[in-house]
Length: 174
Image (cartoon, rainbow, N blue to C red; front, top):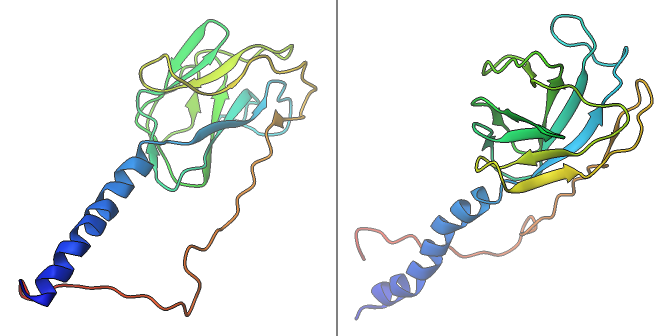
């Protein structure tokens, strides 16, 4: 067996791993209900100028997530997302107005409103069962003060600038 072919045989498992890595990362879909406001009197107006309750979803993943078929649930209500892409490290505000607006590319409105006295709020996968993020019962809310988790991000370099590296690219099947 020639030396380049031996190198290729050793490199193939690594190449296979690199192709499967994005698939495993995409399956994680690290979404979080990052913030809510259940008494929005004058903070964030909707597209119609009205002030509705709102829920903010954060995508902490490195991949865009298609929210088609995902659910937001408050108490006994279950609202389904339309086809909506949420980019990596991005936020999406969904108004909890009771208007049930589900047009892709337009501002989204649930078919329920939030209770300012607190309730259970969940983000569910498309199976309608698996809870990805939830507030078991958020506390009594104050007008125009949001409630949520602090979201911080940190860049972690895997390879530093100027670091030595090797890459083998076979040429002409050799």
